[in-house]
Image 1: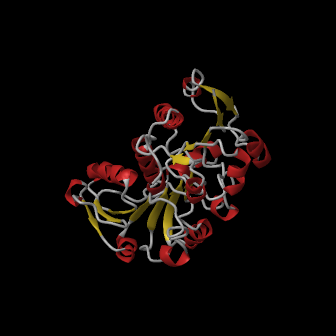
Image 2: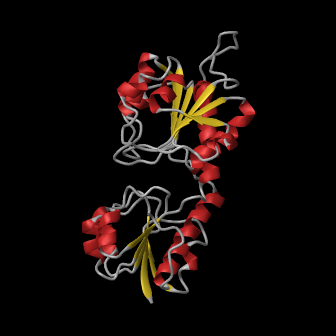
Image 3: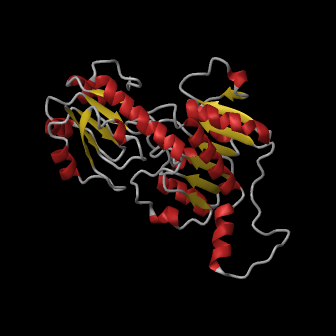
Length: 316
């Protein structure tokens, strides 16, 4: 039987699907494997189900040996995988697109509403036990009705975020590498990046991380947003976290919300210090149904490749 490594605890019932067909070794923990432990465990495996914390590079592939056939990343992103190195060795790489779109879009709106209506600040105030009283000027936030929503990255998640904006009567614009073929279906118009930044009362970042997009939103580009704008990001690495903290500290941004950090679980102290920042621990796809679907898709990819079939969702 082929040997398969699963590098993290998955939701109930997913790993069990592999057991009748493979010899499964699982790191049954919420925390990632230490690098040395991962390299030792991958030796001789035909397949590995990885997460974004697992760096798949030349060293990893050397440790695995020539029998490795598929790396099934339990995520949409795959910046942790050296796809060129895998291709050079005939190793298939897959991801889990599509199945987490709706859950992530829902959570993006949860972040957006929490930031604009100062929900996290209010919740902290109540729990602190400090005295407070309603007043006409107390904890005023930003109203979404009629506001201009900019979406940076109009892929599956960006489009799902746009669909949810209809009920708020917002004006939608987006920036993408290419224009959508049927913009009217999404109620959004394509604009250049500079225009998107200059005209967005709320900017939502959903574009994938690449060398071209890393720190695309730095001090200079964040400064192009209108004074008092709100920035929401569900992708790590696009927003320079220190620049974001500075923009909040200066008051240029009225609020921000972030669900995905560059050096998780570490978050810069400068960002933690900002009371108008809503900070979530990577919860975008964290529903039982979605995490099961992600796990099942990773398993489907493993079984397909090990059985000589085409992967379900190969990374291009």
